[in-house]
Length: 68
Image 1 (tube, rainbow, N blue to C red):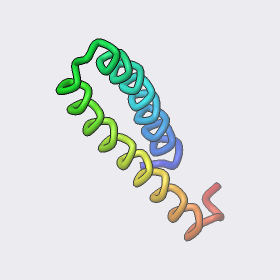
Image 2: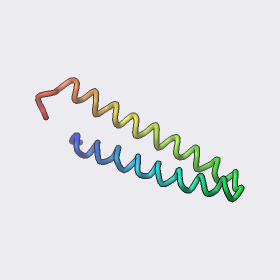
Image 3: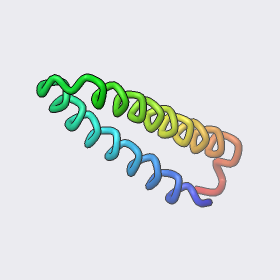
C-alpha cells in the first residue's frame, strides 16, 4: 500500500473519531451513559488504529526516504 493510501486511511480514521466525539458528547448530555461509554471505547480503538498507521508511515519513510 502506498504512503498516500496510508495517509488517506489515517485521515479517514481521524474524521471518524471526530464524528464519534460529537455523538458521544450528545449522548452524555442526554444522560445516555451506556451508549456513550460504548462509543468511547470504539473511538479509542479508532484513535489507536490511526496512531498505528501514522507510526507505520513514519517508520517506512525513515527506512526508505528515496521513495518520496
